[in-house]
Image (tube, rainbow, N blue to C red; front, side):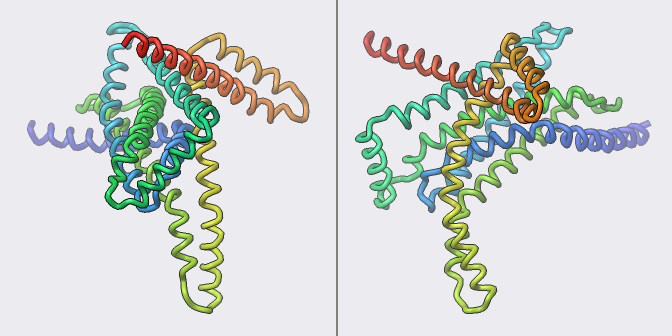
Length: 330
């Protein structure tokens, strides 16, 4: 009996691993769209950091991202359990929490715009001078200097990670698993954990590569020798050096835009009127000849952007007003 139970357990483990592999692949494919936003957002978080600090900042954010996953995966599974019809029957719970996270992303994005365009020229010069002084002064702890940037990146990662995990959870729940000794919920937990860890490794591995493009370019440019091979390497290095700052500026813009698009999309999907309006625009756009395909793609993006900007502006206004009221009371 014991031997039979052991063989059954081993067979179930093998089946579970097969289920987990398929489930994880499916979930990763579904969440790959969010990965683009996550990559742009997190790559732009380390722009403006001294070259010697770049990988340290990326690693600090990566550790924060992994901690986010450690927190979010059990919470997602618990919320999925308590919101089920047979428990508390609260299907609105997870979407409502996602909308709060979406509003925070919109707030962060609009605050970045306000910080960039509403700050005085003198304030910008003072900030740049502080950064340059800190980089030039070996006695200043650059880790402490970048603490706010790291915290901001981890907060943003938390919201995006929550979205990715919820999307993955929805896909994994729909996957039919085989019966066995090991309960399906444990297979769900393992698959969700693998998705979370795998996507973290992909995103921050790419971020690390992106922020070191300029160093690679410099390394290639310093290659010595007159052979055609070395000349080609130096030319590639020169192109990479010229390309790196443009890429980082582009990622900074895309990262801020992604905050509005992701946040606006979450909120738009949570409000039926906005969601139906977006679907209506897609239907109308599809009927337009010649440019119908383009309009079908662009119209929901424009709706998400408009929702994100509006919600972000409202959140920043409310936050600023609340801060002023608290300052007056104190």
